[in-house]
Image (cartoon, rainbow, N blue to C red; front, side, top):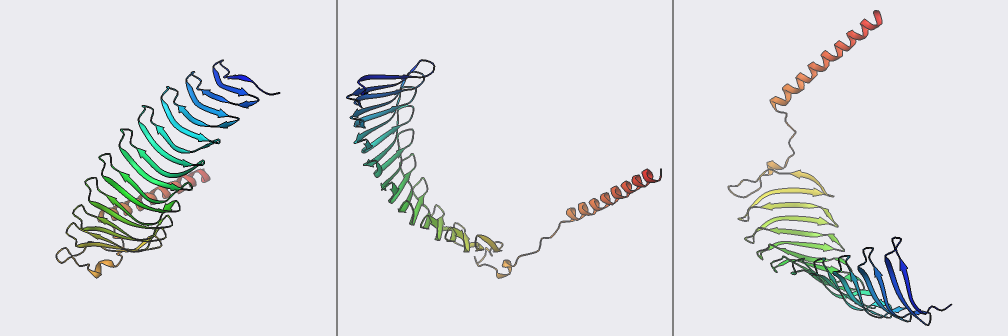
Amino acid sequence: MRYEGIEELFYKNGQLHELKNYRAGKLNGEYKIYHKNGALSELYTYLDDSKEGAAFNYYDSGILKSAMIYHNNVIDGVVKYYYEDGEPKAEVTYNNGKKDGAVRIFYNSGELKEKFSNQNEKIEGILSTYYKSGTIKGEWSYNNGVPDGLSKFYYVSGELMAEKEYSKGKDHGLTKIFHKNGNIKEEICFNEGIRSGINKHYDKNGSLTKEFQYENGKKIIKSNQTNKKNGKVNPNNFAEKPHQKSTTQKVLIAASKIILLFISTYLIYILLVWLLG
């Protein structure tokens, strides 16, 4: 049997769910899908069972959710997404059904939040993020869909905040964090995503204040603050010091022992009274 004309499908409550147009047994023309509240949800145009041309998705409020173009039943070109208040949310480029090309993501207030490019559905090249003010927030270097290489991050006022090395998606190499005045604030070494090596801290004037040694992500040696007079690390500060109990702690421990002894003696007395009658 070859369908011809309009087919209607309904929700259990009687509300129209889908409306399809057939010609010569194939979907041709508009294909509509509705929300349960009666508002239009999806709108496609078919040509001999294949989606062709403009298509739209809507929120149940009736506001446009996304708009795209189909060619031979696959998305081709720029897909535009919208927030529920109608403001632009994102623009994603497709090529023959795959994410391939420029992508832009927006804040709800309309400012550009993020931009990058896909290649065969994977991020490739520089991914840039922005503050609402429009100033650059971060620049990530991507290769085959993961961070790879040097990435940079910035304060909202524009000064360089940090530089981080990645390798195949993992922290690898030296990470530098900066004070707003441009002086180095911290240096952290990573080896395939794990802290390894010396972690250094500096004050705003560029003087070294602390060092921490890491192996396989664990801190193995720690120092106190350096000598602030000359900015040099005191080698005597690197030895781990045994934990010293305070006088208060010692008194509390002694009192606890006495209380436990009293309770134990009392329980033994009760047990003997019960046994001997």
